[in-house]
Amino acid sequence: MNYLSVEGLSKTFGEKQLFSDLGFGLEKGEKAALVAKNGAGKTTLLNIITGKILPDSGEVTLHKGIRMDYLPQNPVFDPEESIMDFVFSGDSLAVQAAREYEEVLWAMEKNLTPELQHRLDEATARMDQLQAWDIEEKIKEVLYRLELPKTDQKMGELSGGQQKKAALARVLIEGADLLLMDEPTNHLDMAMTEWLEDFLRRQQLALLLVTHDRTFLDHVCSKILEIDRGKIYTYKGNYAYFIEKKAERESMERAEVEKARNIYRRELEWMRRMPSARGTKAKARKDAFAEVKEKAMRRLDEAAPELSVQSSRLGGKILEVYNLCKSYEGEKLIDDFSYIFKKGEKVGIVGRNGIGKSTLLNLLTGALKPDSGRIIVGDTVKFGYYTQGGLPAHEDRRVIDIIKEVAEVVRMQDGREISASQFLNYFQFEPTTQYNYFSNLSGGERRRLYLIRTLMANPNFLILDEPTNDLDVYTLMLLEDFLKHYQGCVLIVSHDRSFLDHIADHLFVFEGEGKIKDWYGTYEEYRQKKAEEQKHAQLQGRKEKEEKRVESKIEARKESKPKATFKQKKEYEGINARLPVLEEEKKQLEAALSGQETDPEKINQASARMAEVLAELSALEDRWLELSDLIES
Image 1 (cartoon, rainbow, N blue to C red):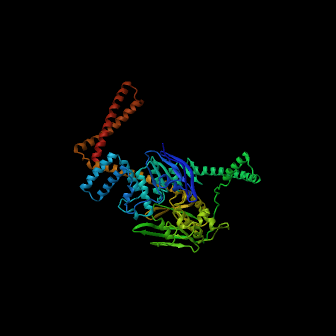
Image 2: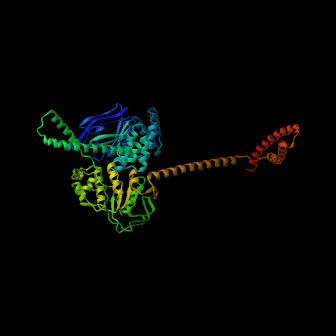
């Protein structure tokens, strides 16, 4: 069943045409990623599909009865609205019933009254009527995994990351048939991102998402829609397949354009020689010339040149950390951490939100003071620190002026110099955008500008705190390539697993309670090892629990056993005396039956007696076990 159909869509802003004659569809259960450079129209397309803005031409068709929901990059909400009111603001009757049930349970945790018990009975009956118990389980899972507090705290009091998580919870709980998501993993730590991957895979919904997280894209989507130079291209496969087929397509297009340019040169020469041609054939040739000219003039993106910026000289001593400790409000964030940085190493930092990653960066750069421990910074170290706070406002400045404020030219590792404008162009700031004002830039463009300023300041120790947020996949690949060839030290906090795998030599993993593990390997390898350790610990725990249960049963049985009577003790003594006699007789009978006796009649008698002896032995041994258990207890 086709849930969504987009046909002939076009949109222009001012003189810039974002796309034209766009068309694609989404089937039931199909999960697709929308990929394009920043400014190519990804968010605009999502806003057109949801009806927030109108296209210049074309139409969007939803299958009748399909419920659609949208997670924007910047959620809209009433600042005075509580978290729970916002999260449960959908119109689903089942969700509203589950919300009432949850609210009653939360209230009963504080105080149990007859009124609350009556509300609980009504809420339970309503849940049964709407068959909403599965939704109630989903609500618990979503709120727990996204660490959203069950309070009356107002949305306006939350951080930007918490607001985005609340908006994510709302669309996941509401359970639409078709879900559009714009950068859903921004502000999520790795554990939350991995949970969201699994959650979306389990849902029977159609999904169209914009994401820069290539690992997330690979794990969730089986189809990629690419907007490139105003056209849309469809790839049915994962990200690696998309990169391969995109390269093949661009190679073919370059060959076609080059062929058209050769034809164009020949036809242009003919047009110059025959300016007054009026025949039918000449007119047809002129029309064909116009088509060839359009193709020949088509601009194709050239491969970005390799950039390796020359960093300031690093001396022998770089950065040394000894027994570093830092706590906040009684919680240990860093406990006895020591490390000596080496030239040119690139270290990734991972861990859940709020665990102390940014705190470590601020300690290393001197923005915070440690509770104890020492940090020794080498004399030649020049930090370049990209923070989550972003670039201060430069409302009255043009992009090119903001960059030239740092440097007019950038010196490369090979001695070449490139201008500030060329460096901007490398990171996807085209000449027209370079003369735009800062106030006109999008959030993603502002963060990219801040990143460029940090890289251009000629540091020899780069510290990057979540540099991948709001960057498109193309800019991410450029940044990866830049950092691979960077000669200085790099310390990166990121939740982008693919990015870290491409850049980091090893990882500082924040494991909680101030513990930081130095892991030489990829994050995926670390995650698998932790999963194995957790599984082993669970199995060991079950084994120990079972052993304790068995021991408890034995002890209980011992405690409940009666003591042996005088008669039982005498019986026990008699059995002890009788057993050796029977064992001796058994040996004699075995000898007779093994060939020592040849008389057939005596053999038959021995065989019959053997059966009697074995039966008596078995009965006496069983009785002996029972009596010995009583007497020895």
